[in-house]
Amino acid sequence: MPVPAVDPEIQTLLDTADTGVFPVHGLDEVLADPARYALLRDLPETPADDRVKVEDLFIPGPGSPGGKLRLRVYRPVTDQVLPVILYTHGGAFTYGSPEAEEGRSLRYAAEAEAVVVSVDYRLAPEHPFPAAADDAYAALVWVGEHAAEIGGDAERIAVAGGSAGGNLAAATALRARDLDGPRVVFQALTYPGLDADLASASARELTDTPVLNRAAMQRGWQYYAPGSHSAPYASPLQAADLGGLPPAYIAVAEIDPLRDEGRAYGARLSAAGVTTELVQVPGAVHGYDLLFPQARVSERSLADQVRALRDALHP
Image (tube, rainbow, N blue to C red; front, side, top):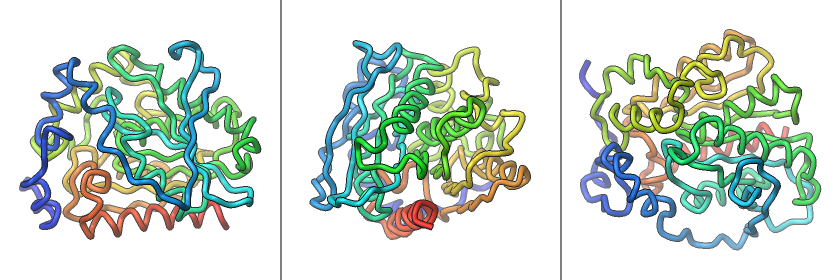
């Protein structure tokens, strides 16, 4: 099957990208060299947004270094009690940080009018599954119990994330349902990786796409979930039952090996009676909105993500 054409603006940016800053052409090579992880944990500093106050909190986190889990909190400058978005960053489970995706968190906070709590979860291969999933759920439990301390409303909590972060957001929603945890009212998943078996048509056919290819996906899963592929909190797409989950917004990129996992998850959610909006972004590659936010297709998608979150959290 021929690969669709990349959006022209994104293609131009790909052609001129500085691969020393982010591995837009060889993520699999980066993941093969753990010594290079440190280079990728933080992208260049994001400009401040005077609409949003940013601070770090440390909460108890079993298994976290020093017994603490860092949460980076983005709160709009207002005295109003706001809904909360629990955000989990991407990075193939092996790199990344709240700071690396600060642009998205700032925008979600300011424009969806919500307190964004971004989780600095433990990374593989040093901390394989279920470490990251445990950290994300621990953060949700803390938000459910302490939302008022950050100006948040514990009755309006959403989970959100992209790529590996989309996986963790979906897993957190599943776990909250299964354990009768804090009520999650919405999940926003952007090009999520949901199946460690990489069995979808796009994972098999789009093997050499920009930013993310099959070799990178295989290596990320090898580091994160060796021997745990079918565990539902590792591979939400393999969960037996998706009923009773919160309404979902799922955005997938057309030229992304993970595309069909997001599409399949959306179809299964809908079949289970969960209100689901599935959007496929034409001409987009994995990570398009974070790596190339200046492209018009990225700007439209970011605005659509904000719209979905705002509508769900401010009914």
